[in-house]
Image (cartoon, rainbow, N blue to C red; front, side, top):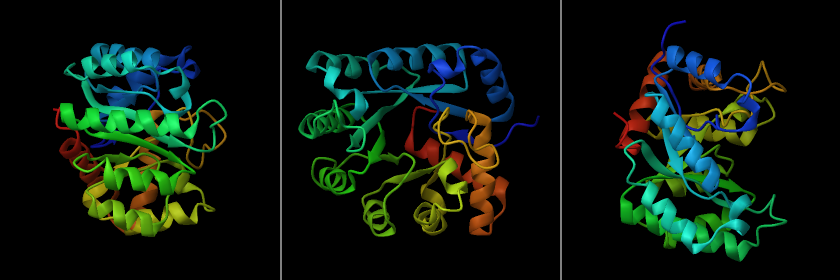
Length: 259
């Protein structure tokens, strides 16, 4: 297995799906990829992400509170996130954002409150953010245009329209593309992927979720980022290795703490 010039910019290797073979999966990652970012979604997973980053030189962490978990979040938790940001292996704040689909235990006002707080923290500590946006495009864009001024980051697993992408591009945002772009029925995501300038593209798996074709329906893993990148190169009509290398340059430009 030869190492590719490719990062998985969003992988959840801390989750229970990897409890039986996490070490083997990480060994494969170290041999095949330039690196990966493991974002947390709450206190426990943020700590686990940092622990993985400290044990594997090619793993980096992001810390923060996901909108689905926000009902358990407190102002004290926000202080802890700020403290973690000084860790040299913490390269971003995330996964943060808005989710109006899985919102039974996450009131929208509370989601907005802590989303804005984490954007303000990103300004304070000068870190990028990893954005989760599900069925909340309008409110999320409004917040980014107001409270998000001066913050940059990646729209993880981008699911918005081309029109929204054009606005975000002007605001300085990057776009993460994953397994959904290999699905033939994902016309909107593929349209945006074909359009986004090369210097704003990142590739990801969001593993263990969103497994790309031809493994859809099985557990996703970071090495499948290669499938996402090769599919994107085919869609864009460019050399896949060159596109992988460009995406890694983009990630290092965004996340300054990645060596």
